[in-house]
Each structure stands twice: as C-alpha cells, then as structure tokens.
Image (tube, rainbow, N blue to C red; front, side):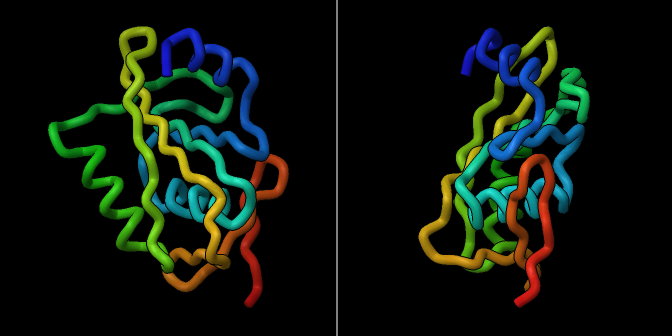
Length: 124
C-alpha cells in the first residue's frame, strides 16, 4: 500500500470493512474476528478514530508478535496479513483478514460480527 492509497483510506473513514485503532490491543483482535465472521476487512493500527495518523513505534519483532497474538487468541485461529506503511513520517500497520470459511470465529470464547462501523457481540 502506498502513502497515497492510505491517504484515501483515512479520508474515507471507518466503514463495514475499515477500522482505525491508535494502538494494538484486544479490540484489534476482536475487530479482526468480526471481519472474519462478516466479509473481511482491514484494521489500521496507528490511526485515530477521526482518521488522523498517530503512528506506532515498531521494534524488530513487533508485527510478528502481534500476528502470533492474533493467532493464539482466536478459534479457529486467524492468520492476518500485515503491512507497514510509512505515512507522513509515521509508521502505520495495516492488518487485513479475509472472510473466514469456518464460522463463527471467536476471541477467548466470544464471537463478534461487523455491522456498519462497529463490532457486535453475538450470542451463541
């Protein structure tokens, strides 16, 4: 992804397929789970809800650690694609997941589904 492509995503804002998070946390994994249970999508880590690039500090193994955490906390496990984009002197990490063929996908026993711009907990 180029900086110009990211600029367009940030300008368009969050939607059914796009979520912004300022940092990597449990909510990122829940969102990826919701995307996997719906139609897939992308989480941009290092971006505020308003679409402003805040950036994240990445070490040598940071992204790999995130991917391992996503895999270990989801059932069936999710393998997200990750890409680091340099944007306005900041690093943004795009985590992408396709719709998962085996549903529902759960995070710590809880299932989510993406509806419009938010994640909703499903009852099982």
